[in-house]
Image 1 (spheres, rainbow, N blue to C red):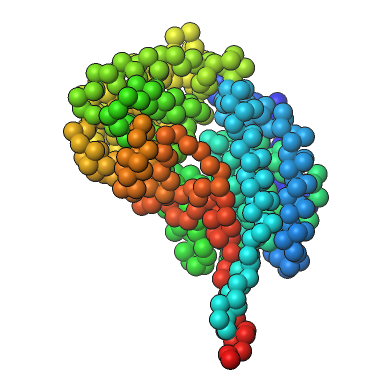
Image 2 (tube, rainbow, N blue to C red):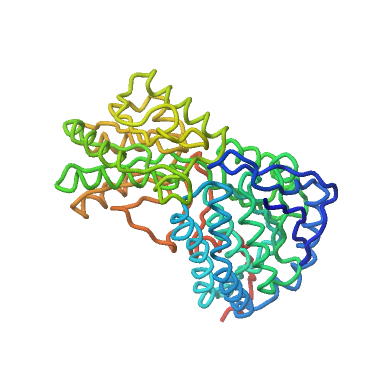
Length: 475
């Protein structure tokens, strides 16, 4: 049983203003596995003031000094990688192999890319008689979700640190353990007091206080579109910058060529990864209507190879994160059946032999139309929907017919054609043939948010631009 009753504020582990605890449920067992303190507005204020006090000195450090701090964090992160993996498996149900090979390493990857970018990043640029200066924006509130906890924490913390900002982190109260260990890493790495602060808690108690706080200069939020809208509303009164990475319903256009079966199978695996709990998952697969029967068989075979079980069992899929999430997914699966989609495999209920834990059957629907609920709403579970198209142009139109625009995917043998199709899709990141790049900007169009994370584009979110006009005298 993990007990985390203190917050990390001003370089110290401190008691909350008022001790209130919340149970953390292990989704694999449905049992309480720990408790964390719930913060309040008073705790947020204390953390913000610590960050404000540290900003003056931290913002004046050189890029080389900040790079050294990032390297120390990287070293401590590696020391705690096993602890982090165990925490992620326990708090949100990630299979042990996924936690060790993906969940933890991606956090390390963001630290490494930030350190690499910082070596050559130009914070000043002379343009004619004007000097353009990029300065840290100030105190940043970072609000992160539970599905890829270390990815979401580090892809915000690393660029904030690198650019000279100070910060207050509020991780998800559903999966708070890895964040607590991350704060221990920051402390062990000797991050100056007040530069990084952690306050655990929920949205009403901490998220609202953080996003509305007048001494917070910027909010970076990752989560649902609904919650992101509330964050923006709370932030509007103080006219702070708001960065949002929100929901998605990403299309995956599978082209009609000799890689068709392979592309369909790969698309199924991409959706099922992390039990479908990825905002950029390619959950809408578009296939040539004339090859729908082939797509069904390829998708069925791929989905039925997906094993489901406890994190330490060696299974490919663990549980989804909570009872509320399980119930939502079950309701949407039933909605797909009721609206007439073809249930290829999976369906309602738990997988056979798993009566305890929030396990979902890997599910594939086919002959879906884009007006069905399962094609419009983000399910956030291991559920794929397959739609048919008569032409590539129609596929692009269907792909773009969504309120979201976080990611899109194109799969095919002809790279020239894949590129042409990808260029027409309205999404912040278009993945061609399953490629992956930590340096590529990540963020959405439309209701998927605004701003970009990852790589050098992330730095811009944490910087203000100042023009020193007349810096160089005219000839």
